Image 1 (spheres, rainbow, N blue to C red):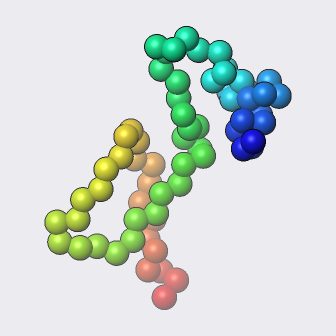
Image 2: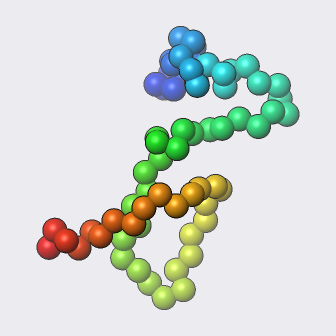
Image 3: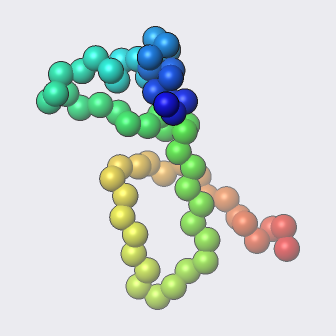
Length: 65
């Protein structure tokens, strides 16, 4: 059992609410603070897909060089 599943079974919110919805209800899979994406490099005509997101910030990664 994963950490989220254990939290849901233990009644910890917001995970516990994910066990209760009706079959047609929309359920938020992830909390925004649980998602971290780093995009580095680049290419011509690069493409990627996502299922929903919002812009948080841009961070310069070359400063450490």
